[in-house]
Every structure is written in structure tokens, then in C-alpha cells.
Image 1 (spheres, rainbow, N blue to C red):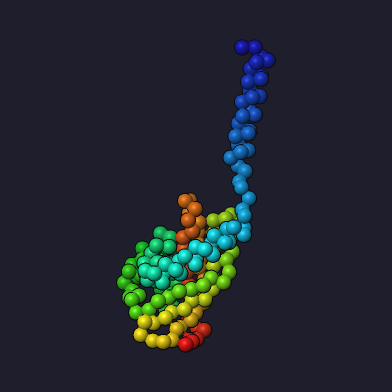
Image 2 (cartoon, one colour):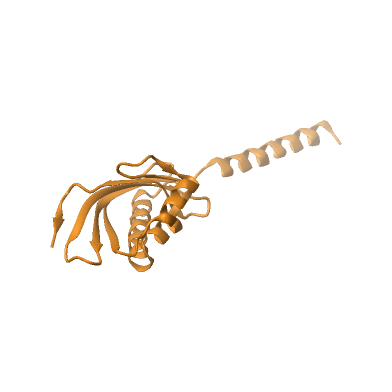
Length: 160
């Protein structure tokens, strides 16, 4: 092999490696409105699921394996403790639904939050209790949003 051919092969190899590296490091720019819409849809589906199968089952389905629940007058519930807590709660005497008011997604596209209002409708009363909530979501490798932190308060009164 001549020096000229060797230099040409090195140059071609360099070009191939450079092009491969350039193609793998360029990421698709985040379509913010699409990501926000997707996250809002996920939170709405979570609420719908809660009305269909109950709060506990819905939370277990949407909660990340490392998810955290912040509940009034309780210690922070994390991961398996959060799931154990949900399993032990009685959610048969009420229905809880919520409506996200706003969502935002990080520039990385893998972390976001939603917040809004929730309503708890006891099965034995004509009134509902209302509150606000915030949920922080993480997009999984498979593209599914999972709940990583949820908290709310119930200080906005009741209505008929």
C-alpha cells in the first residue's frame, strides 16, 4: 500500500467517524407545544382512569417506581412505601377527579409538571370538596410519562 493510499484511507476513516459522531450527537429539537400537549393529555388520562378504577389503582398505574407522594399531616411517601400506602387506603367511598390547568416541560423533554384543581365527591353526600394539586412527571425511555412527585392541598372550600 502506498503512502498516498494510506493517507487517503486515513482521511476516509476520519470522515466516516466524524459523520457518525455528528449524526449521533445531534438531537432533535424539542417541540415544546407538542410535549406540553402530550403531558396535559397524560394528566387528563390519569384523572379519567381514577374515575374509572379508583384513585389507588390509577396512582399505582401512573406512579414512577421512585415516585413520591406528599400528603397533609403525613411523612413523605416514597417508592414502595407510596405504593403500600395506596394499597392500604380505602378509595371506595369517594371519587376523585382533577383537571390540569397548565403544564410545562423542560428543554430536555424528559421532565415536566402539571397543576390544577381536583374535586373529591363522597358517595354518601351531595357536596364535593375541592383543592389544588401539582404533579411532577418524568418521561421514561419508552416515551411514557410517569408521576415522580405529587402534592396537593384541600383549602379551597366545598360546593354543591
